[in-house]
Length: 209
Image 1 (cartoon, rainbow, N blue to C red):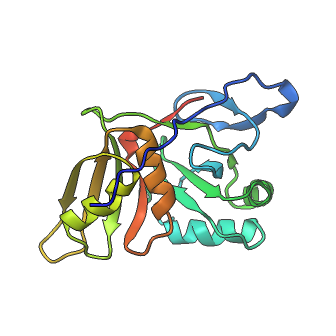
Image 2 (image 1 turned 90 degrees about the vertical axis):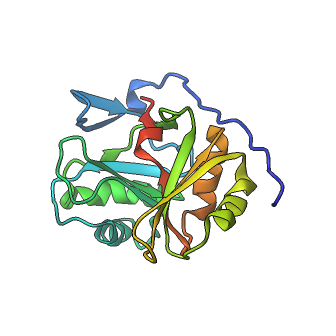
């Protein structure tokens, strides 16, 4: 088994912002109009914008294509949200590796996504078992032991769960003891073709603003 690498703690800057730095957002589903700060790197190091999904036909692929155009051809680093649902709390987050691309997307996306805004700050929180869990589609059809060894490179893996029909591509959940390990794993495999759609589980993502 590869050695477990220690990860630095997540450091968040909660310094107050001046009024001229704040960017008004859409009416957030958690209640009332919310004001979020300027585009700053999130815990993954990405610059993110958000909008409420009001179409059951919207897909991850369509969002990536649209925001790639809005940003002047930049690659979208991360898309997070529940597609196929128009629930009022269904916020889609689109992330870029550089600020300029996110700025362009924010300016241009309003023509199609009218409530697009700077995404709220997010933080990793433990699930009901006290672990920090990530999930992905096991497109590479890797075994549990192989997955455990691979993801242990980022920190202590507490458990690995795999679900789905026999001989089918399965959804996998990897749970870590520490938040920094889970965040590091997401960053490492964000564009993986073997571990597709890797991200923190919904239970382990919380708006910190």
